[in-house]
Amino acid sequence: MKKIPWKTYGLWILFTEAVGGLSGWLTREGTKLYEETIVKPPLSPPGIVFPIVWGILFALMGVSGARIYLSPASGERSRGLRLFLVQLAFNFFWSFLFFQFQRFGLAFLWLMVLWGLILWMILTFRKVDPLAAWLQVPYLLWVTFAAYLNLGVWWLNR
Image 1: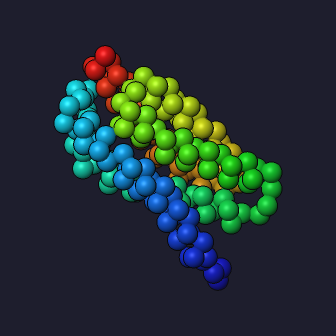
Image 2: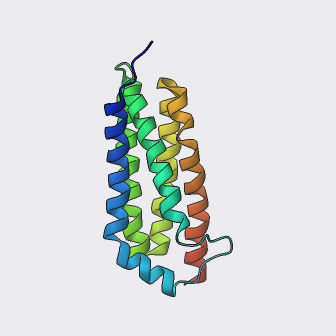
């Protein structure tokens, strides 16, 4: 029976959740202002949905990142881990552009780059560990929905 490296999984999940949590905490005033003053597009979920969904997505990201980290060393593994960190940084800073600075157009462009990075990461992860790649698909789908919301907010609040 193969032993599961729980500590590694736990650290990766904690790391990704901490990045998301810190971004949310640092932009909480901007988020509050957004909730109170910005016109939102159709299908915008209530504010409480976002921390729940992001909490799940960050956990999936952490499991996925741990699986890649635990894979045998290779160029694809190294590339995948770098992409993971770069997309996570883009994710972190999007909240500042969107909520804190309310630069909705720039945030949308930033989100398009993030979407491309996530897709690239998934394609890279697939070569190392297909399950790790599949665990990122809900994230890509949610960011696609976030792009719709971001574009709608930009359009409605010009």
